[in-house]
Length: 393
Ligand code: SAH
Image (cartoon, rainbow, N blue to C red; front, side, top):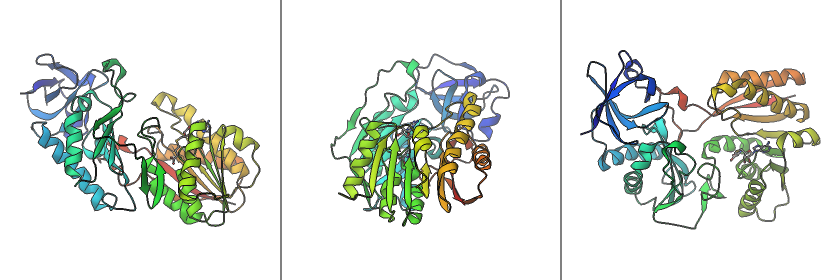
């Protein structure tokens, strides 16, 4: 039987609205001393049942797993993963030959707070952000293999940098089911080397899939600059879309190598593409006015709310350089993946940059995270990726 955690009086309000986090300040006491990562039952101060969830030390004390009283066992993980997999099949992402890259689990968006799973062909890369998910990793990994109809055979556990440091788990990255050195996967018919061993996050930015497709649609005959290219995702799509030239830039030399490798995988020997290892601001300052399609997909400028103002300035500064240099009739794809920067914030930052340039700028598209990053309506914090496609005269 799980230990009971009692909330302070009145602190159950957010749970009544199905928000999955319980902050430590809301906790009155726990019967017994749970280990970090243990499942606890959450009760109101009156003793009424509210939820079961993973307990850990930190600002978020409990991550809710269910608002119904249930046992978190192998069958529980299978049910949740089955639902997650079914969603990806329903929207036409899983179980296809021309696309085997998708996010199978997006934390709260899949009722699994603290867990992220990205799929690359037969390999799932799993990241735990909570001690509870870490403790349950083997059950979860087995459930992934079981519910995916033989699609997934290997599970690579990559939580070295995502688990709470203070928990002192000393976890190392590695396969926990199967093993594979085959690391080429397919997104919309394009091939990508996925570096889950050393790459950022789970090895690839799955979340830009739809936005890359949109760029492909507009790329024909254009001179494209893909700034912050990482694996070269946007560049590969621009090439297929018939761009006249594609330049990829990233400050990391490893990213530039990855981009070159991915271009070579899809368009061997194609001279339209070149990649440069350089700082974005420096490159934008010194480049010629030759591009009529620019992508700006920087890393999160604000990781915390305190950094918001600085981040907005950063977005303005970055975008104003693109407005200065983009050719007339150009398209600017500009993004922010900072969760604390809202759509409105971001739009204001881009507005500021546009006004400085004194150019006529119109919004053609407002972009978003894709369907395999669903937002739980009760957990708006799950919304993080936003972008604009602008027509600049
Ligand atoms: N657009 C990519 C993801 C970008 S991730 C995709 O579709 O997959 C952000 C990238 O920005 C990282 O690869 C990082 O190396 C790079 N980066 C961070 N700071 C930078 C800077 N100042 N100048 C250029 N690149 C930078």
